Image (cartoon, rainbow, N blue to C red):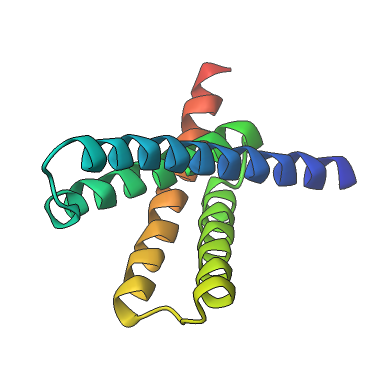
Length: 128
């Protein structure tokens, strides 16, 4: 039982690491685009949101693939931990709470990570 919990915990860490790596790479790319072109932040906001959803889906997918079971739970946990980290960063760093719009986004992020987790489990099970 304890070995299974460690496996599930490490799979969540892999998913979170994937999300953070994708977020850092995409942030670097977007910042370079904004710096060296005439584009404004408002003109790429939809693209940033799409990349965020893709990152959460990929993180959930990796979590489910590594865990090989309970994809809904693992993906949801991955999305929840990600949202909690963002909330803590915003609250402790900027002294602001989530707005209603942000709460809706993060709820959708969690659902997206859950879908990625389910698909990750099913794809990894099909390969065996």
